[in-house]
Amino acid sequence: MVTKKNLSILVWLCRNKKSKRTGLVPIYLRITINSESDELSSGRKTLESIWDKERKKVVGDGPQINEVNDRISQIQADLKRHFIVLDAMYTFVTPQMLKNVYHGLPAMTEKELKGKNKELTLMEAADRHIAFVEEMVERNKLAVGTLKTFKTTRIKLREYLKYEFSKEDIKIVKLNVGFAYSFYEYLTLRDPARIEANSAYKYLSKTKQFIAEAKKRGLIDAHPLQDFQCKYIPSERRYLEMEELLRMYNKPLINRLAEIRDVYIFCCFTGYGYIDVEALTKENIYNGLDGNKWVSKARGKTNERESVPLLPIADEIIKKYHDHPYCVVKSRLLPVNSNQKYNSYLKEIADICNIGINLTTHTARHTFATTVTLENDVPLETVSKMLGHKSIKTTQIYAKITQRKVSNNMEMLKNRLFDVDGSIRHL
Image (cartoon, rainbow, N blue to C red):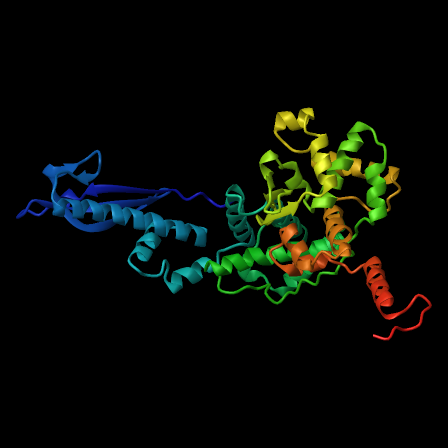
């Protein structure tokens, strides 16, 4: 993984450069990154007699003394600020690079950069980006699922490199578009899991992202896989019809299945996914401008806020579990089991209720988007807002025009244009 880069800055007096005439001693800063050090002049001098060794500053009053101390503090702040930027851009940072940027120069000369470019490997690029994503997850800027996908991609890459080249890493400058095609063939034909095309393209997309991020940060000159196109095959978005939804809701079930069923129904009538419902608390419920109850939460996947008015069924489910032991102990709205049990129990429920599709958190969101909202004339823009989508294009993937919707619209048209006997009306 990427080596953690630690910066320390020591302020000290360079006594061997003390002026014999004035007795003034230059103030220097020693920059250390991991075990490598370099020195930077502050451009200021002071007398040893008024230098505080412990506090690393000049003691006393007066504008000149204050100016020296302010200058030292400013240099330290500037160095730390530049270091943060360099740390985000490079897999390595040296004191000389930090000094260069501080003086307004490029961190590395073109010759130095090209030398480093030749050394950067695919696994190093992957590790660098994964470290960045990990930090973003810690700050709640990205979802854990996103990090998991990048880590899985790295695993698949390493398995492929072992299979194809009998080694665990490769320099990026040695890659070409053929590498991408070969990796795709491995995933779909050689990988023991026999990965589907869309999943394989997902891993290729993440691989390209590893390299693209390295290029953006100046770590490589070119993106060798740039011309490889990930050709996703549109998949059918499965969802429940209203009859199936109500059949499941009204079906008598034992407690362990009834709880899972209720959580799933809640998702169908709010559009929330498993990870978001699991985290819901009383604080997520509020009274909207319309005087009705709303539920609001930033989605774990995108960090976009998803605010939805509570429909009666969803509100009824929340009330049902108000005093449930799990909800009381965990301070949660609903008794959500582990994801593994949740999916396993949903399969049982589907069999019992004679439902032919695979029930997942995705089918619940599709059901909300299609059966619950769009089929009942809720505008696409409104559905997009409630689903917490950043772009309405994402919602359009969910928003499949169903046969029922076509039938309802044409029935309205027929009633408007024709009489009961089938004769056209005179409009």
